[in-house]
Amino acid sequence: MATEKEGGLVFHPLDQFIVKPLFGDGAVHWYTITNVTLWLALAVVAIVALFVIGTRGRAIVPSRTQSIGEVLYGFTYKMVEDVAGKDAVKFFPYIFTLFMFILFSNFLGLIPMSFATTSHIAVTGVLAAAVFLTVTILGFVKNGTKFLSLFWVSSAPLALRPVLAIIELISYFVRPVSHSIRLGGNIMAGHAVMKVFAGFAAIAAISPIAVVSITAIYGLEVLVAAVQAYVFTILTVVYLKDALHPAH
Picture 1 (cartoon, rainbow, N blue to C red):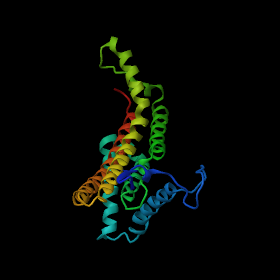
Picture 2: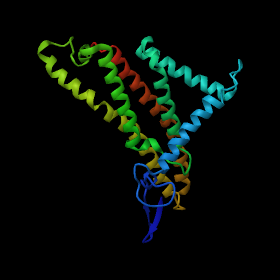
Picture 3: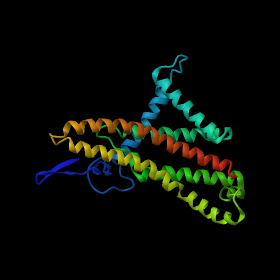
Picture 4: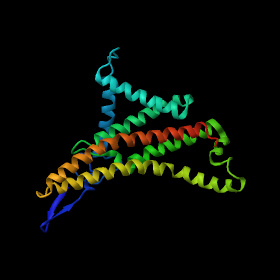
């Protein structure tokens, strides 16, 4: 948003990330239905529409909607199988749900006047924490204390192994932080930049340049929305691989 003040323009590119009650005004509590709630729910509805309604015919010659669903399904399945192995396929439903949710949330956030839910660390942090807890618990359940071999670099010289173990342990616990900030930060940055250029479009002298810039950035953000969903998902699969096969 850009407002005129004392003959100039004042930009508020971060106003678009403010969480507000969907009905009325007032404080936001844990039970308050907000704009975040609405767009998270719309992401779920969009996924259901694609995979339940769009593919209900299950035609031999698929429709466009069914083709999109099949491509996304096959792409994610192959990712899980290729990166983490065939024994990881049992976790495919969780990985696929995660990928679809982030992908649709990212794309819905690009609709004008929408809300980019994945720009909030509160959202991406919960997703990253769920992945971290899942793979950690799975690692210990499947491997027992052998899971700790993930932090012991047996190929390194013996004197360096304790130091490397500390580094590996720290990097392991940093995973949910980097996992969530990478997604949230990229989405927030792109939307903020678009908002700034939208403010410049109010200045007649540079509005043509601003409009062209917004168009280019929007196209880049479409790519970023897909890439960041992929990056979050493939990192999840890599972490899953570490839980299933922890030996260095």
